[in-house]
Amino acid sequence: MSQLLATYRRDGERHRIELIAGPEGRRVIDRPDEGPVRLIAELDPDEGKPQAMAVLNGDGAYLQRARAGEHSLGRILDDEAGAEHRAHAA
Image (cartoon, rainbow, N blue to C red; front, side, top):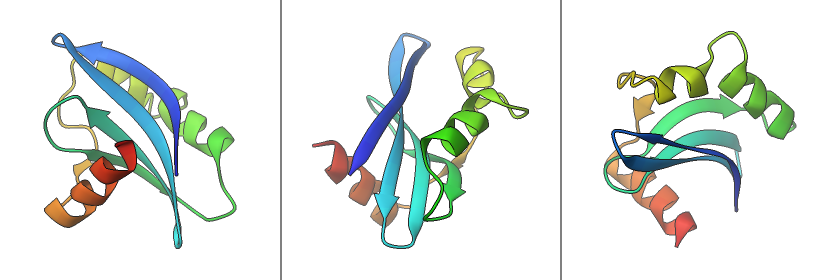
């Protein structure tokens, strides 16, 4: 299950920031229209949207930095994890 938290465009490409619930916790991911999915944060099972929004807009200011064009943010998910998150989007 995924929850859309925000969208932004960088270099003309749309990105979706999503909160993904899994058995071991939650992940905040950056999913571009094309290319690899990036892991922004891993949250505990009892954490949710408030903590995810703090990551996006708080001290790290992920969303502001991503919109400004910083490409090295987040960790690219490996093929298996990326495929799992792409399947959630379908």
